[in-house]
Length: 138
Image (cartoon, rainbow, N blue to C red):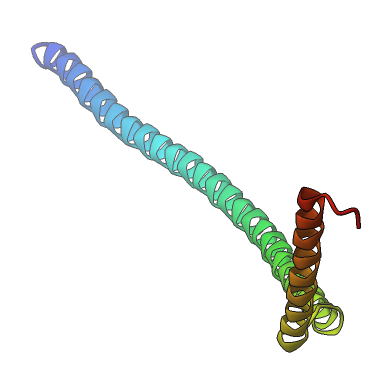
């Protein structure tokens, strides 16, 4: 039995090392599992923050887009009003021109009268110049 005692202590030490190794492996596995769970939670939290931020940005973009759509609709409305205003002004100018300017036949008659008056005036001036040159006072 005396020879067995040293082997028992060696066996206990070996079993202790094996037990310690198994316990260490088990504990290491737990630590890795806890680390994995912690990393997964952090990743999930960050992903949730990013998704929340994206949703917030989408809402803000939608709101901005609605404002821009409304403003562009206002631009279209303003353009339609301006076009209608210009068309009305153009119609007023056309009516004023129709009512206030000389028509072609009237213009031609006026030119004929002016031409006749001009010819008559030129004839009178010519006669006056001839009389002056001949020495006759008018």
